[in-house]
Image (cartoon, rainbow, N blue to C red; front, side, top):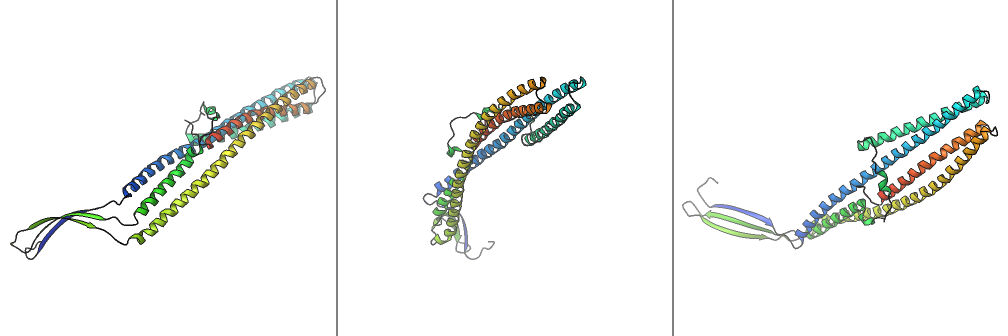
Amino acid sequence: MGSDFGYEEYVAGVSVPVWLPGQRNARRAIADNLGSQADMALQRLTWEVAGEVLDRAWRLRIAGAEVKQALKQWAAARALEKDIAHRFRAGELTRNDLLLAQQDVVETEAVYQEAVSGQQQARLAWFNYTGVHELPDDLEQFNRSGNPPDLAQHPQLRSALAQTGTALAKVNDTRLQRRAAPVESLYAKRDRGMRGEEYTDSLGIELSIPFGTGSHAAPAIAEAEAELTGVEAEAALLKRELELKIGNAAQNVAKATQLLVLAEKKNEFSHARLKLARRAFELGEMDLYQLLLAQQQAVRAEKDLQIRKLEKQFAMAQQNHLSGVIPQ
């Protein structure tokens, strides 16, 4: 450049690779699978968040029920203590009976305060995760049992299978790149022999075909195949873990159902016994300690019944979630 003596040549051109058979489709498959993988990852994240929300919601609901039952137990103890104090002043009962009733009031108040503390912790966990204070009104709708969904449609498993599809597409693309693609070039040239001569203009096409590139692609192929093997193994392991978790969730529902039946019988028997104990205490056939014991057992049985009902609904919600259902 910048000299008018000797041979001059100016060349401008463009080179583009030539797609080998199947390479274009392989690259398109990678792009499609990456898009599907992103969608499945978002669905899996939605499912995981839904599980956390359900867990915190039901724990708060159960904690609220415990507070309600503890308050009822405390109120019953105060009512009995008030009646005992009246009868003590009338000379019908001893001071020992009054102290026993007052002790029961303190114990039930401690149970109530402990339940309130547990509710506050559960409410804090709920608020910190969701940003709202109130529980949803339709929480029980997610507990409805129906036909179990297909495990292949599980968000977590679909996300793993999407990764497998992407890895397989990469393997296919890497295998097609075992031989480097030819390069096609189009160029324009302008030259002249020496100063004073006319320029000669020409157009040309060049095709470069590389040879002996298979060995260079072997490490990339091995790496892609190792990645495929790894994600396939992870997907298979995840499927077995999901089957185990779903099976355990079904057993938890059956267990909660059996415990609820027993709690209903226990509550019925304990309240019948409490009714007889009150009558016997009024007639002087039973001391205060036995009455307090019967009352505590009845209150605990009612509390256990209410908690068992919620625990069954919680178990059903967990079963639906582990089956892959995402609440709308």
